[in-house]
Image 1 (cartoon, one colour):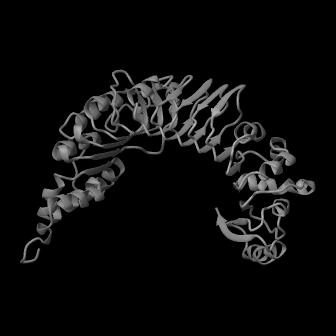
Image 2: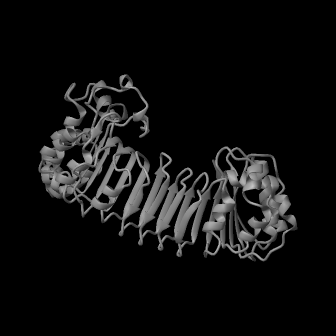
Length: 447
């Protein structure tokens, strides 16, 4: 330290605390505290803290300062007690990989880990920091549990958080089996993410009731559901990856604008979402009952499925679709594509859409039978086309039928596979524009 003292002493504590909050990791914050008295004082006002079990174990192996064999989850209680009402964001990560929420029903008890030092979503663990002075001040909480310890124990994280964190805005929970018994209404919560969760809320009625102001909802691999229904009046963005095969799926959300839905084969699908403009749908096959009258605002559509013809008839016919993105499942080939979408329907569909993106697998299989479309003539409104070229030695343009019917001054983006040779790229870039001089060409790469 210089004779003039610590230069950080001249900075306000609030600014130093904000700097430490951007560092976030507790190990790095501890190092900063040792370097400066000013940073030491500011650390008690730090608004954001992140604790990682892997980072803590690494520091202990390297001989760093630590608390020996004390449970990792005890560190969160210590931080919350030290910082108290200044703490706004708390992130706890004990995950190693990801869990599978329905495995807990099939794995025998002997295969579970009996320890609970990394079980972060238990009621006791959550209460140790939520019940401190930090609880009411928290705005964001992010917990990634350790699946081998959490999957066979039902945890009370949600009820405890709802009782103690009255001003929480964002909540993310990962790798756990969660109970909703005793869950209270959280009117300030607008962002909720549940990832690889077994949830004891079969129809999502507790979620709808207790989180009425949600604007962003992510349900990624949430198991334990039976006939789930999302009914949230303020919801604007939703990503839902269904982990099991419930008989029905329903979404009632009048303000929803963006919906990404991945499911298998629901018998009943109800989308009462009149404001949705972007829909990304990954599905094996639609069931007999589909109610999608509430898609009057749909303009951007992405579909990944082999049931393309049925899905396009339902979601694209009669809609003012501006951009269309098509993809195939990993196992599909060009014969599957031929059966899924007849060439005549495909070209008719392209004729009334402004922008078409053919994703990698769809592009690669489409090239193999697109010559069948040569006899179809139509007036196209296509102004932007994006195609993914497979890795091959092909230098002739394989999607001429589409180019023949593009609108004047159409912009075509060709993305070559990263394994394509420079010779193939150069040949395409020099020859294809000659055959179609009215088209604006762009070139790129995909992996």
